Image 1 (cartoon, one colour):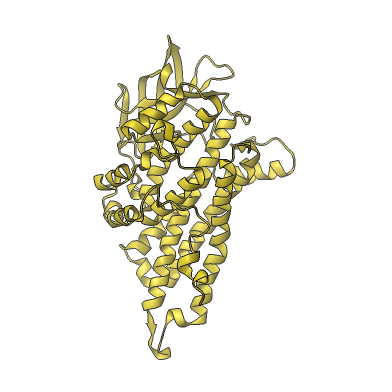
Image 2 (spheres, rainbow, N blue to C red):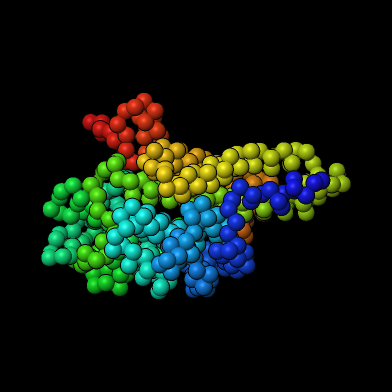
Amino acid sequence: MDEAYTYERGADVIWPEIDHLIPKSVFAELSEEAEENDRNGRLSDRSVDILRSAGYFGLPIPTEFGGSGASLAECCAVQRAVGAADPALAVGANMHLFSLGFMVEHWRRHQDESAQLLRDVARDNLVIGSAFAEPGLGGALTRSNCPARRVGDSWIANGVKVPCSLAERSDVLCLQVVDEAGGPESLVVALLPTNSPGVSIDRTWDTLGMRASESDAVRLTECEITSDMVIHRSEPGSMGDEVFAAGLGWFCTTATALYLGAVSASIDQARAALAKSPISHLSASRSALPSFQAALGDIYAEVLPLEAACVGLARQLDEDRVDPRTLAPALMALKHQSVEIAIRAVEMASELVGVASYSSSGTASRLIRDVHAVRFHPPTRFVTRQALGRWALNLPWSFELAERPTD
């Protein structure tokens, strides 16, 4: 066969090259830690140190501020590689990447003092915990139930943020609160040092999959958020905020990419199992049999279009002339499809691996558990299906549920 058509040449060709950002050896090292991380339900210090030494935590920060200047498409390719090595670590680290992407998108549009915050993250290799999720939000992206009152140039905030990945590992939290005074810019997005007075972290994360993402609960009690740590202000529930739309783009594409990494690892498990599993009465390995070849082909027929869509949308968002608000429906659709396709692909691959994938330990069984977490990342399918239908009918739509409860 012509080398250009081989699996080794074609499997990753739609993704940007990332060796200049993070070498392949880093992902191999991360993979070595994944099994123990899952077993312990917490990350090893080594996993985080590997990422830090590789410069991961400054990936999208512009080079003039000390970062790597990686594009969103490149960050997605990195997330896919981390997801293939250790999906739980990839989920935790993705929250850092999303917050950093949000900060970069704000700076690109406003060119304000937030540049100093980016310099600080790059200089000190800071880990950001993304504390956007809250009880009672129903996945709403531009709201908060955490009240904050204005005292001089600061806000005093209270509330609970959960789940917050890498909470204990983080140096700063990126969070949103709502100014009690109200007004058109009462949603405040800011950084808060994790060691600030009034910040406490409860180890609440004990799950079937993504066990080592360390997505614990953060409690805020009379926490002071200073004005110099504010990144962005907006109207709660607003659809018109371009920075939030860009942030949605970062999350939908990088989250999809990391789960595609888990899918690729699951497919690798299947390919290896097919090659080494003989069927004695046919005197052949399963990889030589058309029925198993076709089953593997079914997986790729679903996965490859999702990969192309993910990297394609990321590249669209990388273009300065593109308004991210116009891409929001496609981004929500991408996230919507990732739930169905990623879960189905891993389950189909596990069937090819065979009964070993049903073991209580091992990579194949861990990936089955890990991939189901894609259901719970916002925007959830409850939101996206409604929003996309209303958008298609030219009705008002938003990034959150919009309906009246029944009596």
